[in-house]
Length: 185
Image (spheres, one colour):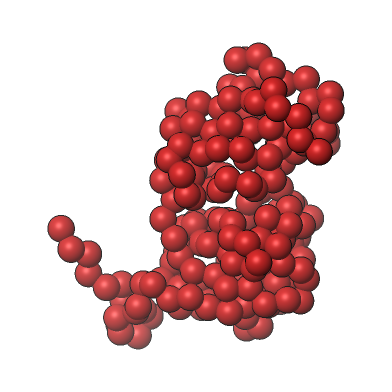
């Protein structure tokens, strides 16, 4: 079944495979660790994306986020508001240019994570299920750093060692999370 091109606000067909250059800006504090990027709704439409879709952010490396609308004061500037974790994953800095494009994430069957700090203490199957619930909805790629906010303001960072399938993987309730014994710095 072939898909029809999406129509923009003026009823004109949009190119779904659009890539766009944006300037990177700081995320709102409430967005830190949530794996989202905020953009002007007009820019989201230009990408052929909708709110909640997965976009690929390319700096020196590529990572994925879910796109959300920017607040009114940040619109009209071709900005992408992302947190420090996402900037590190994409290897791009504040006020630098990044390329964004819509992409398709696939439901992750399994993800292997390695704690980035000693004393993570999350090793049991029960811990893995809890971690899966905390990360549900997150778009990840191999090599990404992800943050799980545990109890209160306590958090644990992990390195995504492997995803099945490879590429952009979306953490779902059925995703099997394995915590690797491998120590990473």
